[in-house]
Image (cartoon, rainbow, N blue to C red; front, side, top):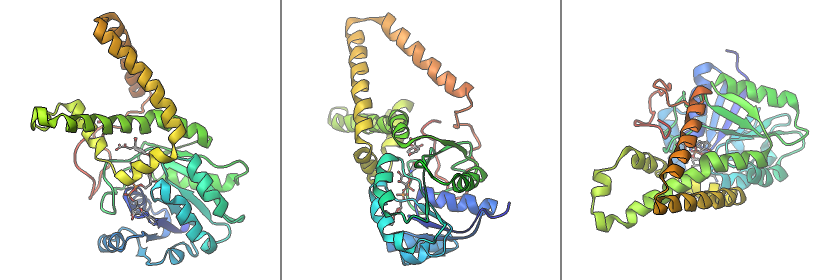
Length: 313
Ligand SMILES: NC(=O)c1ccc[n+]([C@@H]2O[C@H](COP(=O)([O-])OP(=O)(O)OC[C@H]3O[C@@H](n4cnc5c(N)ncnc54)[C@H](O)[C@@H]3O)[C@@H](O)[C@H]2O)c1
Ligand SMILES: O=C(O)C(=O)C[C@]1(C(=O)O)C=C[C@@H](O)C=C1
């Protein structure tokens, strides 16, 4: 396929940027891919494994002349990075991000974006518990959603060009407004992660009573929680701090539901529990019928792809 952008600059060289580089390279979507990360160790590793065509030691050099710049750093760092690159962005360039939270990123980045640069925030709904420059793989985005939340008045041509790149990496593109994105993701991703972190924390607290039995007899449900709870602490600290309102809203609703179930268990109300679990099973079946279950066998994991089950596998 013909290149969609001549020079793509990836800022942050972890799971998402690495996977983008490998996916773009596989499909020939970029003339040149340049990368920068704050830590010299990450830059060295990226050079050693040839993750991008060229790793720069200066963030300004990375973005200079790039017609697409991708911010792939923790959401709490987006504003600082935007401020650093702003004077060096090429007129007419597109700036996007891959952050898991959208409204806070827009508030932090938009004030720094020059008038002649198209800012199109985005979020690939794809990931693993692994992070860093060695964790990426070309198939990460295949059959996944990639949400774009362009502010009003964004050039539709620039949005379509970016959407074309994303589709060519194998993902499906949808647009929505940022507050709606943050509420939906609080339900589907952020609060579930918090619950997993909490459950593993509970197991850790009672380990003195159970000795090592929690680890030894780990059933599949708990093992899935531990996979999620192994996700990058910096990334998830930032997600909760930056999507505070929506997560607190969903957490409130979650707690109410939990109390209802707790009461049903105490009262021996089997009918309530059965009816509840029947409803939740229908939701899972609906996801599978809609073709949204991507836990299927061949997920296009290439070299460097993490072993083991996916969260939804
Ligand atoms: N991991 C996932 O499952 C997932 C999925 C979708 C979106 N995201 C989002 O993508 C972004 C990147 O996540 P990731 O999983 O690739 O993280 P990662 O930890 O694998 O990589 C982050 C990279 O950013 C660099 N970095 C951190 N602060 C920086 C700064 N101030 N300046 C320059 N570089 C900096 C780090 O050195 C590292 O190379 C986050 O905003 C996250 O919310 C993650
Ligand atoms: O599979 C995983 O490890 C993930 O948690 C990926 C996951 C999610 O599905 O919640 C996590 C955060 C992102 O912003 C997008 C995707």
